[in-house]
Image (cartoon, rainbow, N blue to C red):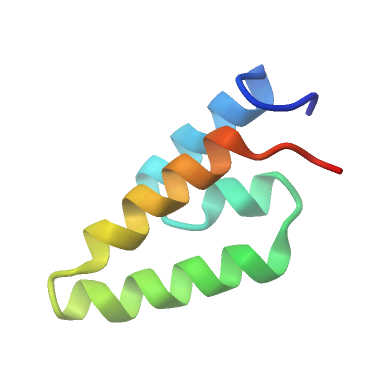
Length: 66
């Protein structure tokens, strides 16, 4: 994936739209994916999971590999 706005980032953002952390998993960021998935699941219990869900989408969309 070449960087911000690339097709890969758009696909990753769409993946994160459905499941928080899935976009990061598609990008190969295993630890961040697990963190967002678990945090999203815990916070959805308190009806605050939408915050992590949106964060996951934006993070996948603007990711720029080193």
